Length: 245
Length: 133
Ligand code: SF4
Ligand code: FES
View (tube, rainbow over the protein chains, first blue to last red):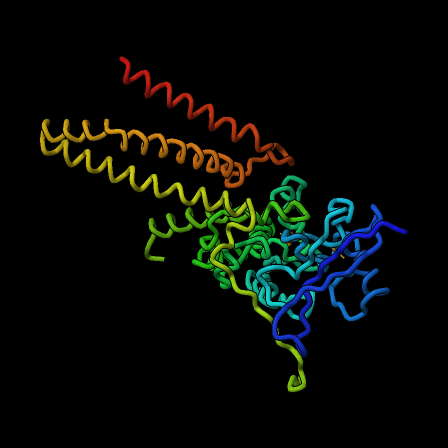
């Protein structure tokens, strides 16, 4: 008989359940199988009613995030071999409302991404004939790391500040804000500074730092937020020196 | 869109009081935040010393004597440990708040962190030298 591994899943079916409950499954173990693969096995062979999100299966779409033994992870990038022979507990991403089983409601996250104006507001508008906005590799390097985000939401699940105050703009959105502010083609700095300066902006962060720890893409949102704090402090000083504005 | 048939009923999990005990990362974070209690008490002691100093030599020496009590010494040792721990976390933060570039490459974090320890050691030596001279 094949070796088995136990997988516990937090179930929540809004039409029947008042609150989430644990259900356990036995899955044949193989060292190549990812947690997402195991979920596929369960769905195909054991229980077709479980719900979870996935798309790319290669850690770029950001949809398969969930809590694996209490740590936010991309389930396609997490392998059974790192847990075997112990059991694995899967829960929907922390700090988000549970929509159904392993699926969370991310609308608040998306609203926050939108709020920071995640697009380039050009310094001087160019016509098509004038060609593209030129940028040197060095200028790209300034923000590239912060542009690698796949919007998986793991950093929000890792952030206790977001848990305690859902109004906090949060790691990924603040990293994205830096991504555009640090882009030399952009001129939207002023608008974004308002969001950044708020209590719910960078100052909502007490530097727990776990967001950067769990980020599967090395975005280092904690660093982006600390840079934001420096920028916000400068902004404050400058405003003090010329109060008439 | 008509949502009247929707079965949606998002379940919000509440944050338990002991959330920071569930994960080592959070526990160490809380420990760092807790070091501020020592800093606050230490400031009060210093301010109190300043007050006594303004009241004359006898008062100031009374304050100095009080600092020699076992409780005061234990407190200062604990405060020192707390502050060293806090400094360690603070130093670790510096590369994140500065982000130096070497051309297109991000400058590695280690030398930045290390340079702060060196700076601290230098300041420590200077202060020590001043007291000895
Ligand atoms: S910053 Fe990292 S953890 Fe946060 S959403 Fe982006 S990729 Fe995911
Ligand atoms: S399925 Fe796309 S990131 Fe995991």
